Image 1 (tube, rainbow, N blue to C red):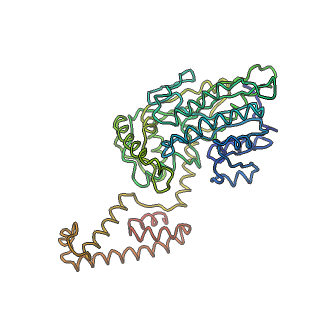
Image 2: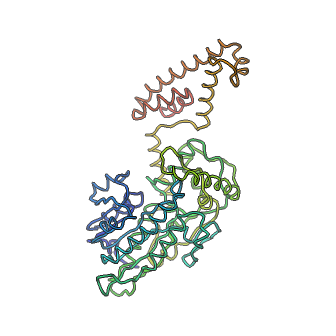
Image 3: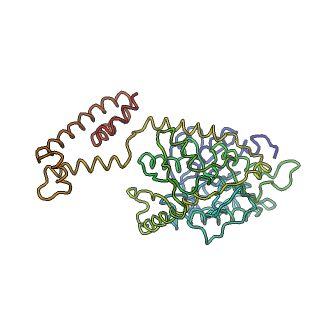
Amino acid sequence: MHLSENEGIEGNTFVVTGGLGFVGSALCLELLRRGARQVRSFDLRSHSPWSQLLADRGVRCIQGDLVLKKDVENALRGADCVFHLASYGMSGKEMLQFSRVDKVNIDGTLHVLEACLEFGIRRLVYVSTYNVVFGGKEIVNGNEALPYFPIDDHVDPYGRSKSIAEQLVLKYNGRPFKKNIGKCLYTCAVRPAAIYGPGEERHLPRIVSLAKLGLVPFKIGDANVKTDWVYVDNLVLALLLASMGLLDDIPGKGRPVAAGQPYFISDGSPINTFDFIQTFLRSLDYDLPKSWLAVSHALILAKIFWTVYTMLYPFLNRWWLPQPFILPAEVHKVGVTHYFSILKAQHELGYVPMVSPREGMAATISYWQDRKRKSLDGPTIYTWGAVMIGMIVLFACGWFPGPVPLRSLALFLYRSIFGIRLAFCLAMAAHIVEAILAWRLAKRVDPVNARGWFWQTFALGYFSFRYLLKRAK
């Protein structure tokens, strides 16, 4: 395509489902920057890290549920183009909520398609996933000619539901409108790689929290396994180009070039996932272990978590239930090579990644370094466990009557009950003094988290205080 950069955008009304999310918000802002008449964000949430910015820039934020047909119709009425980004069940506990996954990803997509036909919306760009063709079998430089992965062979409901939804979207391409005779709906699907960038809210926060606690004990798969990533700005560009590829009023053009077509989108530089993450984590003073776990062994561990969390199905929405460490689909994503060519998107849409992987990673690292400076840092969960258990055991040995585990060892070290009690009291005094010093220092170098530094240092003593000293330097 050879179109102006704002072709089909200026003066038009757009709806972005999932518009309060990381990609959705970036897309809304770019549409406004390029001259859209109105941009509507349709999202189940009422607030997100970007909701205030979107409202300030003039995005109309509509709260609603894809599962409810009336909500969808209310959001889409009068639009010229729809970007359907909203989905459910990509990772973590969401992945196990089978009913909700199907309702949002399949029924919700049907509601969007029917609303487009009802209101005469000419263009629909659907954000799909690599998982429609990938299910754990190696793919090297694949392209859009690959067949869909068999529906019944998907290991998770997300990949299955997105595959069904994408096929529905592409089959709806060319369907005539219900009221406007002679016109029809044009659709296409964009299949993005793993998304990263400043503010990404699904993958990187989970990786950072696990690395901070020391809960990334191994890498998965071989060191030569490669997968794709895509920087958020590159993905937004691809989505805009896809919407232009659905225009049917370009002089000298016949059928829209993107009509009924899927496109793989990435930075075009496949890399081992753990090499990608290693660079990111090292910049934050975290690290990954050097040991590797075979995919077959990782799948056994993942299936155990799948079984346990399936039994906990009624509690999956509860805040106190942590995310599963890993699930089978996630093992495939990081442990099996699967990357795809972007030639089709380049030739048909004119897609060329504007941000290089180096530039994208630099921007992401800068964001996370700033975020780390503003947050409470601390030791791994193993340090927490060792210190807390040690203090509890020392107290129990000094004051609890009757047999206490490790009392013999404590008596050997401190010679008497009085010695044990004195050691405990001195340790507590040291923790209290260090907590007060931490609070006073934090008031100067990290006032927002001063209270957190006090309580963390009260619990851990020097093992917490040394992190604050490092920040002060």
